[in-house]
Length: 302
Image (tube, rainbow, N blue to C red; front, side, top):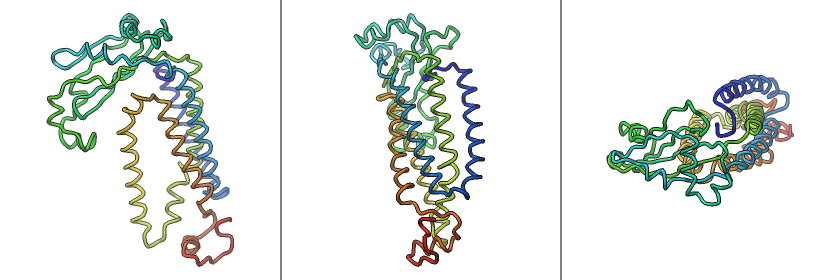
């Protein structure tokens, strides 16, 4: 929705997204022993950087016009620390009336509203609501939709959060983001850049990263090394999930895509400059290379 596509179009876009992942992964599997891990990782990460930057630029076109109406939405909080509102064109105009020049640039265009809110240390966000969707259900913000039901869930949501305090804390509106809806054409452009991203990911990191890691680690530490790599992977995923909403709330989706592209630059440099090629080499030959006992000349450049 935030890209400009309807729910139905986004659904079929996701179907195509997974089909591309499946088909290109097959191609990557066929190429991995022909072209090599280093080549595919280099090409894949380069394509990922370009596609993510393009996606960020497309989101930036509309997000630079968005308005944060958290103050008027905060005033709608009732005594039970809840909010129920129906986002339509009339409410959009009311919320934008206090937005100054930024709101005037939006004019009467259809918009979307996303509310990011918190009870104590725990944050949540509503689904995007469109001002031109007459069949949309009301936005409901309640403590149950934000505060975890028990301490186990609370730990994985926010390890440092105070669950008992959150159960009594007032509702705080962190952001109420009103963004003009992109055109359908812009939405398909975003979809296209994401399809390109998935194609390069599937042929590069999607196929090669775990294969290369398992080959590069010495036999004596391979099991422990892969376990640590998986742990770090999950830790990074958890970190991204933790910072996603605050980052999107303050800087927008464009910032996230630019950030991902920046991280991939490091990935690209590592793959292009420091990763040895392991195509056609036995595990013993690879291990000997790292120990300085190269059994076959040209191991790193094969």
